[in-house]
Length: 574
Image 1 (cartoon, helix red, strand yellow):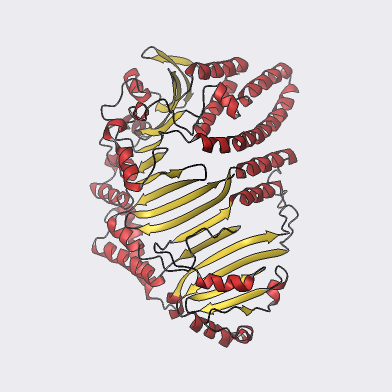
Image 2 (cartoon, rainbow, N blue to C red):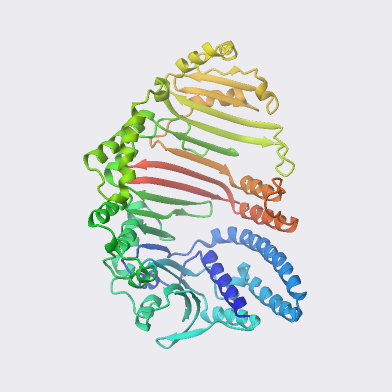
């Protein structure tokens, strides 16, 4: 039954990672950060409690979601136990398996996690010891956690093997040349993937018995990121792309020696030219950072930045174009749009080709990349219709859909939606289209922003009415309720100062209901095994309950002098 114990421990590990979302209010952040080396190539740290008013809103939905996943596991394990009971001597094994599953499923609730020492006040960090991952969770009660694991092992009939480091006992699972270490150290549980050849001294450093001389607590690197990007200390993370690249291009820290030996990798196999050029590529996007910008009972704002080399960031910053209404959450069922200045894109691409011609790649492994310069020049030499360079972007806003049923493949009976095509000198484009289409000519659209009725059969099946409006900035088409006013308002919407490259927002509750409804749909293709109705219903319920946590979700992507910035907002349900 040892395989059952291993499975159980993996489940416990997943539960820890998924639900350790809050920081320990009674402990300072430095008590966690002191274990993280300041040269770690990636860190994700939760160092402050989420407000109780936020968790009070989310926990009931989390419980419902966990209950749905419990049903999935119970259904699948029931089939396993039935097959097992039909084998010779399988009835006893099935009974043991049932007890094990029941014990594990007892953790899958907010209260079950608290009873296992995992509560709202659990500090959490995931970081790299070199490249290999470590997860450290500060428990509310380490004894409760150990007792929960012991109960699971007892039900499995066979516990995981154990070993000692510095007098502390830890459990482990061997996976070929690696070992998964699970150690409860006072009120911390540490999970680490390490090479099996690690000696006691090296393992002691990994688990934190020997703390790094230079730690994140001392360097204040996370604090610096938060200050630079306006993140709170609830959550902050980064991936150091340059440091990860250096691991495979010389690894000056030597932290990954055992890992590289297992992989039979030697950076000396790359020429100095290749090493230098690959490091140059890594410096294009040297770091990715992410964190919370605001946390309160109404919403959670998250920011993410892909930092870029200055010249690349400056070039990309020229690409977004003005599109009326693009950026703010329009409040409908779903909205999506983007902006782009095609001439700026051409200039940016041409500048990249110029740079590669001025300083070509000499590494043989990048020969195909360098050969792409000639292909790029040929593409730029192709004739492009001038109207293409007039394009500035689009914005679609769907406010309502009625009558659609995915399970029966029933199309919608009613759609309320608007779309704006942002084009410079849009009236010229419409005039050209009118010359080729009598239907468009008959509309007699003028660049006055006034809506004109669209009497087109294409819209009659899903909308009672459709209107179009034209101005110097673009063409708007709207169908459904209030379409005349909507078409005009699309053209009149404000331009935001900080032009986004892309923007989207949606009704989170209806989105999750839509995904849940899709899960109920049968496998019409006949490919693969169709999920039982009970499983599909549980997936639907998990999606619906997830949607009970949020009202809306919104995302904006900007190109700035810092790089690519993604800002999102989760509006919490009342």
